[in-house]
Amino acid sequence: MSRHTRWQLIMTIGIAALIVTGLPGCGGGGNGGGQDDNTGSVSGQVLYFISDQGLGGVTLTVGGKSAVSTAGGGNFTITGIAPANNQVLTVTIPPDTSLALPSDDPILVDVTANETYPLAAPIRLIDSGDKPPDPWS
Image (cartoon, rainbow, N blue to C red):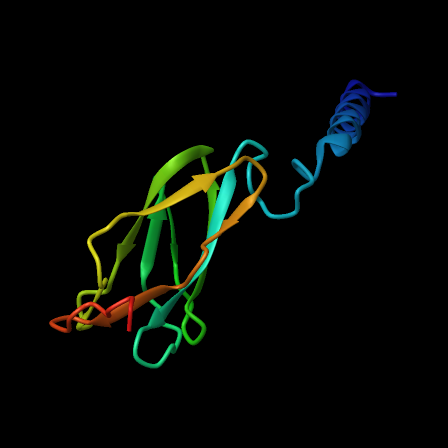
């Protein structure tokens, strides 16, 4: 066997060994969502207050992680958030719309590792310039 053929054989065996030993580690954490095991997520919906129509294109941020609500349904899920209580959910409305949040009150969420925190109610946007809805009417 020539020196060149021996070198090729050694390299082939070495590469095969690396591939085989690497296979058991494939697949990540096994949670299927691509989310780190130490993080949580927040899910909800953004609606137009008057019609309850889902609004897409609204950016929602918690703990430095963001998601954009989907067209049609207005649904969103923010993943990869570090666990902590009373984190502020920030709502960024596209500047080319005339929509606004009805209140300046912060939206607070509690994020737990390996869990999704569903908002208790949808985030409802109003036309800017409109009065916030009266919760008692």
